[in-house]
Structures are given as structure tokens and as C-alpha cells.
Length: 314
Image 1 (cartoon, rainbow, N blue to C red):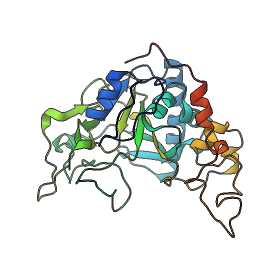
Image 2 (tube, rainbow, N blue to C red; image 1 turned 120 degrees about the vertical axis):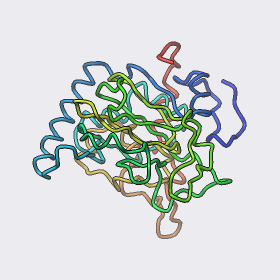
Image 3 (cartoon, rainbow, N blue to C red; image 1 turned 135 degrees about the vertical axis):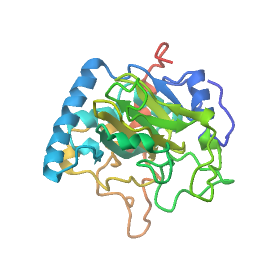
């Protein structure tokens, strides 16, 4: 693999063969901000995930008295069921994470989304308008990321797993603005975004497809005018020296069955919770998120043990 100089697109490629990423995928990720991986999940995995999502949604709908058309989201999904935890280090998709962000990463967020069919008045909403049910936005913390030349930096990537058939328009599919991660994302006086319609991509995909994308991208949702609820999962990865958004520390019950790689991705240190400030915290406190030891990053040994894929879905 050719080692490239730093660019505005994000981290420098590591001096090793990519584990899964093709040159075309790298180009699409750098220039468009996303690429698709078909059949990332098998039909059996999709069916199992749907069963868990639907069961938890039915319980929450009853307990919280959710309306028939009300969208619902379950945050910190990895803590809700072992099947969600397994996706945090999906054998193929983790390779893309390492190729794109390196090994010193962890989970920022994980969530299961359910968007039931909407009423007919959703047809009248302008896609992504400020007064719509899902305005155009880029993901980020309150008060936003510090911009570089007016452009958002590459701080995070997400993998979206789509569990229902979104091939028909207006199925509640996500829309992304191709290349908007390289733009200052200007906004008009009335709050509307200046977007070239030619750059809007509707992610109309089959069940089991994964979207690998930069969360700098402007994105919005089409209304769900189909007869089924859209169900999907999102996993966001970022550098380990940043803090996650939907958990602080995971509970002992969640961490107990985890592999070392899963523990890293859930933000834990290799030696446990007693040395977050280093081995001499009274005299020389030092964050092991900033100064990790090898045992804190088992993903590094995992990546070194993996043979690069020669064939996969481009």
C-alpha cells in the first residue's frame, strides 16, 4: 500500500496493506464520504437482529405509550443484548474501521432505530428542511466541532446496518449529501442548507447492506410511506482519546463476557478500571487514553494477525 501524505480528508493511511479496503472504496470514502458493502450481514443474521429489535421495541412501545407513527431509538445498544455487542467487532466491518481510522479507536455510540410508517402528511415535508421531521445535519457534540478553514474535521466514522428492505423510495431511508464533508456546508438566512440536488444520494438498499460513512456528511431521512417499519443499527467509531456520547463506563455485566478487543472498543483499559490516571497518579498522573500501553490496544495485535482480504464486496 502506498503511504500518502496528510490530506484534509483525514488520518494518514498506515504503512501496511489494507485489511479489506479497496482503492475504489478509499477513493469513494475520501471524495464522496461513504461507500456501501452489500451482504455485510447474512439473511440469518438479519432475521436474528430483527427479532431482538422488534421484541425490545414492542416492550418499549407498551411501557412508554408510543404513538403509532412515533419514531423510536434505543441508545447504547451494545449494552442491551449480546447480539448487538457482537456487531461492535464484526469480522469484516472491523477491518474497514482499522483501515480508515487505525487501531487506537473505540465506540462513540451504538443505537437501534425504528421508524414506523408515517401518516400521509409526511409527503408534504421538504427533504431535510428545518421544519421537517428530520432536518439536514452533520453529527457532532453540542456547540459543534472546531472547524478547519470552515470545514468539519474527520473525527468519526459510522457503520449503518440496514435490516429491512429500503430499495423502494420513501421507505424511511437515509439520504447523504455526496462530498459535503469537504464543504463549509453553507446555510441560507431561513436556515435551509445550500445543497445541489445532484449530490443527494438516497441509500435505497437491500436488507443486510452496510453503509460505511463519515458523519461529517450532511444527512437527512426520507419519510417512511411504506407498510413496514424501517429498522437499522448504527455504530460510531472515533479515537480513544475522545469521550463517548451514550455511555461513560459500561457495566461489569456487559464487560464480563467481552474479548480484549471488545473491551477496548467499549472504552476500557487493558488492566481494568484502576489505572485510568496511570501507575503513579499522585505524583505523575497521565491519561492512558492519551498515553496507551500495548495492553490497552489489543486491536493492534488483532490487526497484525489478520491476512488482508483478496476478494470482498467492492
